[in-house]
Length: 153
Image (cartoon, rainbow, N blue to C red; front, side):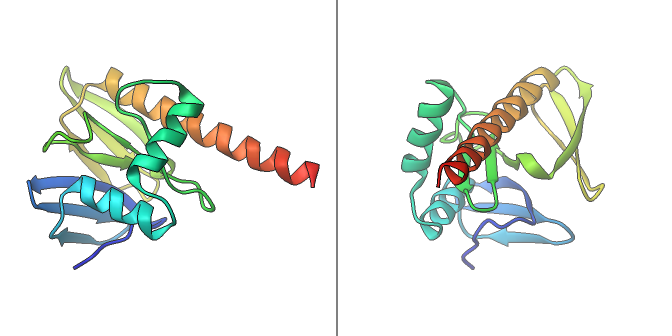
């Protein structure tokens, strides 16, 4: 089954090097692709590629590690990785679907999504907070550029 990221996609977790578990608002799917492949295919579906989206995000945020990706800019669908996107343990999270985060311990955090669904993932609170901030910053810059462009037309 192919999967395109959409507004209801909350998180993409790796099961192994060839499968992922996708969390949506009320559903879960097992997809026969790893999280990176799902991101890349979704970016292509919306007219770019993972690499193209990454370069765009880097031009806005500056060089960095674990760059958030604008999967689809019309609806501001932005995902960010918990670790290196090429690491087989990398989890991808939808920034706009996150309501809050909680620290469980030094290496585990709980994510509370807008629909009150919760998942625990192996990432420190501080790292998760930083990644969420960067994704929010990316979304803000992209949104403001659209507004400014529309005002000029």
